[in-house]
Image 1 (tube, rainbow, N blue to C red):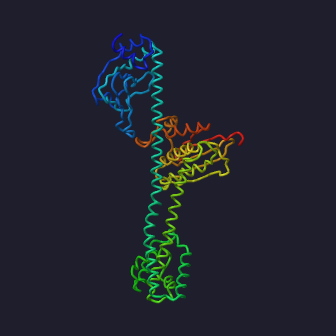
Image 2 (cartoon, rainbow, N blue to C red):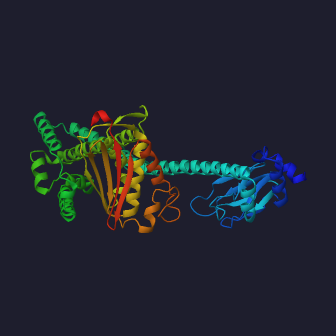
Image 3 (spheres, helix red, strand yellow):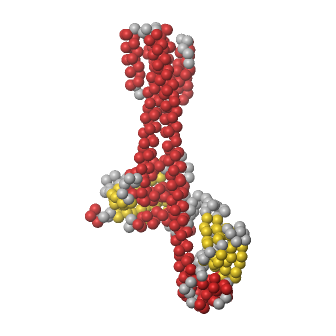
Length: 466
């Protein structure tokens, strides 16, 4: 037995093979040595041989494209490279020796003879290939989940940032408005405003605060600018400090020169400044509190949506309303929808609840909606329709994008197949959705024409719900 045959016998994959199979491998293999950091195969180069690592350690690392940085490691005793029946044609990563390494290679031209002469060896190598496919698929699926989580996290951060920033700015301005109100109160007290006029001031302020301000969308910008200038001139004529700052607040509240004159009628001229300052400060306090309330409510809604989306603190399988999951998904993806995509809901809210893994179904809605958004780009219409069809629940997600190319349709649910540009998709989104739907004993199909692509998910109800 040759030295190489002895080394091959120590490889776990070959340990219990017949001696003639080991001898045949040793006779047809080429032994190669590589120094540390030396390249065995460049990314994209032809894969034309099986590799048995006798000594050392190899590292495969993608150095181009969207998966840059992913690492696969082979250690002494591993069998890698091209294997019989494999569809691998080119190396997907650059393979380097991490330490001085020695390996034996078998060229693919010997595969037919090996398969014919040693079926047991061929079967063993097919098993190794199957294990490798499972490992790569599991790694890619985990990466797809992490990418999806990253996108959701980025979207959530974006959605939370706006109300958080608004609340932060409003709280700072609130402190300033409260200080202005206290200063105005102090000035009024120093001037010893009579009790009847103090009551008049309080009543006028109460009426003012109870009157809702005009909607910002209903105010013509030019009209508002003219109104602010008019109020500013009126205040300036009466010697009020910060007239232009007060004018902006009063203009937003719907004031003009006439309303302001009516509001301040009956107050002494020396009290006009503190009175207007108090009105403006009170308005500012009220509006800023509303901003803080609205922002806090928005953040609370987002946190609640994420909690419901992930079914945190709940059992994994339970009766759910699919509409809740769809709405939470739309809320979390709101930063992408608000760019110009209209969402049209056609929900049958009377549908019975369904027993399912809620967080997994939410991943289905996420993948389908994200694909629809990507297909439409910056604008379009997203339709989501729910209905009951016999003993199944139908969820249909329709986009107005350009449609799926005919040549891509047969492969649309295949793992790693994608129609997106390099760097924008892994090709596992629809595969993941398909697997989850099948896990729920359901089905997923699609219809696609230019201007309308519809993905239909059907989930079975328990027979007792029929």
